[in-house]
Image (cartoon, rainbow, N blue to C red; front, side, top):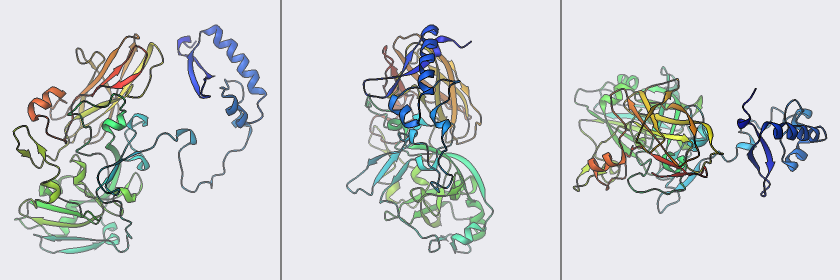
Length: 435
């Protein structure tokens, strides 16, 4: 028999929206009978919606008594209308509207794959609309055979598919106190994870022949910002991809259609979208984006440069900011973890602000440079709590505290924040952000 404290019913609130209410067994049975009688009299789903009631089994809900939407409408699948709140949230970044970003609603997602339509966006000069038949990639510089490739040329190369996370280096502005009303999308939403399909960059470099003097690669995009970044040749021969597909379909325009560079585990801006040029040289190219931007200003006024890797990090997604616990009882604490250096090997959760920790369960699959889910069963006693998570990756690196990061780097930086994050649970069940 089900535990009565977990049984709920839908009731009409003052704003005509369903709200959960606890019910004892006796009240539940009498309510079920009443709702069942009402359900039998409902002629349509519209009437059920208007009455805002739940139809409890074994009674028949109205949507079972009528034909559904034909398969041909719409031609491209879309989520249920009841999930319309699960969307990206745009943010303007600069003077021009074309410099913008949008964040992934991580608190509303499941598993490790981010749907392509919810993957975060970041661009410096808008999204170019590129005809793939006219797009070209040139590989030149310190190579034996400079070559220009069409998309058809590239699609003939042997392909691979790999699942990796992608995180903006400016994700989680945790150096200063955050907005208490922030959600996971607000604090960690410049993060997504997809299956990427494309060509190992090593295969293309073998085709052109790399000179022994080449130690760095410059990648340039075809957008109006001509985004350019340098990366070491070792990364090119390790796991770098020339990606043309994401989650089983060709890239979306905002993700770099028809071709992007993908550097697993490195800060997101280095995975240059709308890729048009790769130039090999003997030293970094010192582009605008790696001198005036994407450097870490230290406490003494100096700046760290070429801090490529996104270090081990985690966040609890449920319960989290903006959510509400419906009274004391059982809840599963859920979160995500990732590391640019490899696999997550251990996760811990604290419900008392870091005074004590419990081992969390890592959910399969646990892949290198990919999001990993973790969970912990929790019985909330109704008292205020502070939820935190911390993780360790396969290199032995532990996710640091805010204090440890500030002690090492000061408060001038705007990038690469990976500190332990806190959510406050109030006695009323409201969950707020504590940075």
